[in-house]
Amino acid sequence: MKIERLIGILSVLLQEEKTTAPELAERFEVSRRTINRDIEDLCKAGIPIQTIQGTGGGISIMEGYRMDRTILTSKDMQVILAGLRSLDSVSGSSYYGQLMEKIQAGSSDFVSGRDSILIDLSSWYKGSLAPKIEVIQDAIENRQHIKFKYYAPSGESKRTIEPYYIIYKWTSWYVYGWCLKRKDFRLFKLNRMDKVVRTDDTFVCRNVPAPEITSGPKTSPSIVLKALFDPDMKWRLVEEFGPDCYKESEDGRLLLIEDYYDFENMVMWLLTFGDKVEVLEPPEARESLRTIADALCKMYEH
Image (cartoon, rainbow, N blue to C red):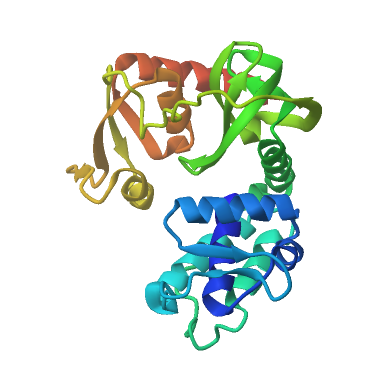
């Protein structure tokens, strides 16, 4: 939440001649101490802010260094608001919506036109994701441990971690933190976490390395898939591999040749096509699909 609050405070200072720490604390629903730390961070970022104590004092951008609001163009502000709106799609509270209203207040001439960027990060998991994200955000802000039950391919386990980052990647949400069980930094998928709660235990921040999030496996592909898909599956092939991923065969079916890293994932993916695909290679995949089909026939024969 901190970066959004800093943007909000800067927006207020750009729009108003002067404000006070109590006013900002009430506006952003945080303590005066938090506001003071935020002002320090803005100063460190190169924003020339001055604070004057006593009657008639307050917080303002230093005279002589007054920044024009056009340092943020209307397009810039639209992008900022789109980002806040996307976070609001998975928020369990009205925080981001209120923050957008605060940033937009008095800026109707600055933020004009219809929204051209709409982002929804919630998918159909909003009901379960939003409460988890809210708990984890609060734990990160207050440096508190979180504990939860985790479901992984290797089995179920109970974990307690020091949370440092909430990450959206590969269409999924993750939390990155120090796992007390493994004594190392780990990435946990939120949809595999259950009963997520904050504890009363606090922790001192470690020297946290950047999360290692890559676009795919680090190992070299070891499986070459060759398969023929029915023409009405073209949309799925294009969506997942691009418009040049296939060649049309003589019978009209679509030949796909792709590298794969994980055999089990490949077989599970092929099963989603039902009888709309015929695997040519590797032979192990053909045998695996036949075995699964036989088992399904026996399951449903009565």
